[in-house]
Amino acid sequence: MLDERVLTISGEADIVTARQAARQFAAALGFNAMDQSRITTAVSELARNVVRYATNSHGVVHVRETEAGGRIGIEIVVADEGPGIADTEQAMRRGFSSGNGLGLGLSGTGRLMDEMDMKSAPGEGTCVTIRKWRR
Ligand SMILES: Nc1ncnc2c1ncn2[C@@H]1O[C@H](COP(=O)(O)OP(=O)(O)OP(=O)(O)O)[C@@H](O)[C@H]1O
Ligand SMILES: [Mg+2]
Image (cartoon, rainbow, N blue to C red):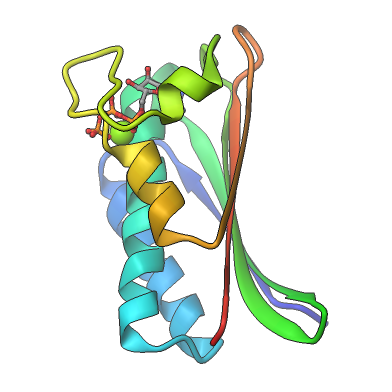
């Protein structure tokens, strides 16, 4: 039975909770300290985007164990029902921000993880799935 944790985000304080949950989970799965930090930073950026851009700063985070081809990994899904993103390619581009951010969150997340998939459309919210495999 693969393990899973589900957390709700409703404000700034929940970014810390999501970070802690991701780190604990990654450690329990046997990720090294460097990868634990990469995973924690990635979750932090996605959670921060929920707080900043989603309606009422509301979203949900799933942290779960995953397996493929005999490899163990961590899969994190961060989803919200906020305004969504019209051009996801543009949003993922390093340096693009619709607000006054640096526009480094999503591109950085992609570099820190092994896989990243973003589904979003105007009025349909945003769902980002990230994965990292244990080495
Ligand atoms: N959950 C979301 N809902 C709606 N729009 C989002 C969401 N996450 C990201 N975006 C859009 O994608 C853009 C790029 O996000 P990214 O995290 O890369 O940069 P940023 O948040 O603007 O700045 P930074 O993360 O560097 O502080 C955002 O400016 C915003 O327009
Ligand atoms: Mg951001």
